[in-house]
Amino acid sequence: QKEVEQNSGPLSVPEGAIASLNCTYSDRGSQSFFWYRQYSGKSPELIMSIYSNGDKEDGRFTAQLNKASQYVSLLIRDSQPSDSATYLCAVNRAAGKSTFGDGTTLTVKP
Amino acid sequence: GAVVSQHPSRVICKSGTSVKIECRSLDFQATTMFWYRQFPKQSLMLMATSNEGSKATYEQGVEKDKFLINHASLTLSTLTVTSAHPEDSSFYICSAIGSGTDNYGYTFGSGTRLTVV
Image (cartoon, rainbow over all chains, first blue to last red; front, side):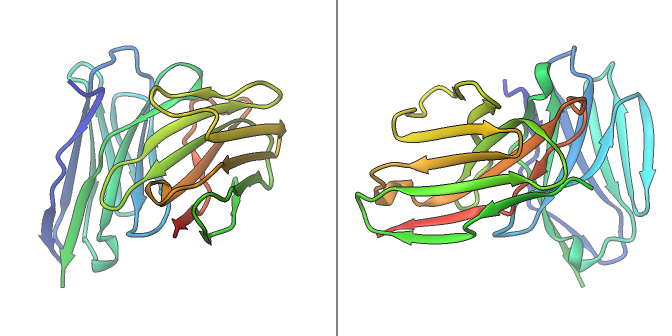
């Protein structure tokens, strides 16, 4: 079992819809959770961080964390074609070292 | 926000030569830097973790004599690919975290696309 698992996709949604990206992790001691966006040919950029159970909203993005279920998700409302990218889930273990999932590729169709 | 500068962005070299990639934290002190490699359409692969002033910790399967990492200051880490071969062609990305930011996300450099011919 991978430490951080994501559906590879591709996930395709129409423009304006809600895109839902999911991630599960195996280490119950994990404390910090991140979502990165990576456009093709570019390096990842941090878009959301979440540290406690519940929802955290930032513009069109909402991160959801459920530590009991070891589950973190990212919702993108009003999806735009510019949101088409690979989304990486990352979980922090000791000493600030993140473990990354393999990423989910999202395509938003106009 | 935190900025990490990575150079060069793109390099083409001949087989057998060495290439040095620089990663600088511009507005914070990077106590730890990470080096990743990513092949097309594949996930990030952590190569090594470097802490300022100490030897890098390499992941299993990464040759430390081939991928030389130096983290001589709190703002600069370098990765040297020695005796490069075509199979080393890849996208190399650094990331950094600073002191007191262990629970914060990574700041990534813009990446270096290495092509060995």
